[in-house]
Length: 405
Image (tube, rainbow, N blue to C red; front, side, top):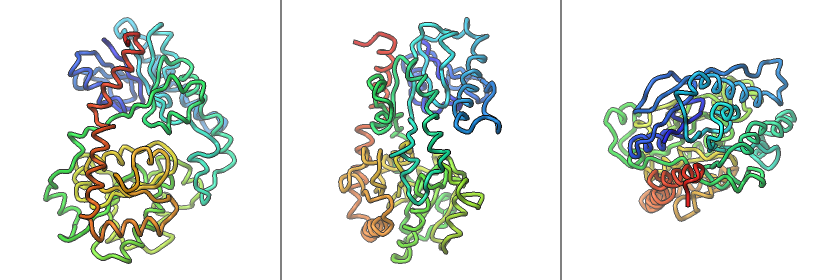
């Protein structure tokens, strides 16, 4: 059995399932991506380059589609000379980051499974969730056009999946029945509470009696509530001694239009300029390797996760797998995962005082809340661990191949 994966990056969402299929089932897995060609853990990598894409002259509303066409065409051209050599039984791709639009011309009748991560909506969505950051009219109009390639993939795909119900339910009802809810999966053998290396403790400069709060985000941005977190952190350290906040993430904006609304070069700098923060109490660590992040999370008495209604971050489930007590925003799709008072604490995204009060309650007596962390770990083991989701993925693959019951 030969599966062809398509994504701009390697291995992206497909690393765990591809490694399992290669190692445990003896399947052949090939990746086409923008990364260097070669072989990794028995998986062949084919490199593609986008063939064209949006320019400054491209209409703003059409740029997402123009870029997607460039990537789809690039993948087609990279695979075209290999079509006699690479004969996949199944094609799996991330719609939006590796469209399979043209691949049926190379591999006719090959089933296609697409990962559908996010369907854009102009209203009642991430775009207009924050009234303090109203969207530009152009972005509202653009949202109606951004789904063009996703719609083509929905039409063409044999099957699809989304990581959460929230993400699946954003899709048009006409296509929803062909898209299952299957998460990418969490490696609970890796993400779990562990001993912390002395070198990590030294680098963090933590006092022996410090109570650690963690916040993790790919980019420090409005969509992940970085500014709200900073206000919460200030209220906490002004009312409670000995608390240190460890912030993991880069200064870039991964999602959203923050940089169009501010004068500063980063949203982090924008936030820091608007209040006086004790940066000995709030420490910015930048991006860190996964092994270091697991150790940082293992030090945490409380992990804060804030998001507008958007794609659920892997960092939340990683923190839960490490048995951390979670304080999170009561937003979709977080409430699919966290139940207030059962496996974490939920508060309104905008309620700085309520979030701070909840954090102080936990930090005053961490032992009294530790059962929430254990319940969070149990939730991940029960619903999101690899040994749970990989069989679901394989069943979907088999069904797409016509081998299901």
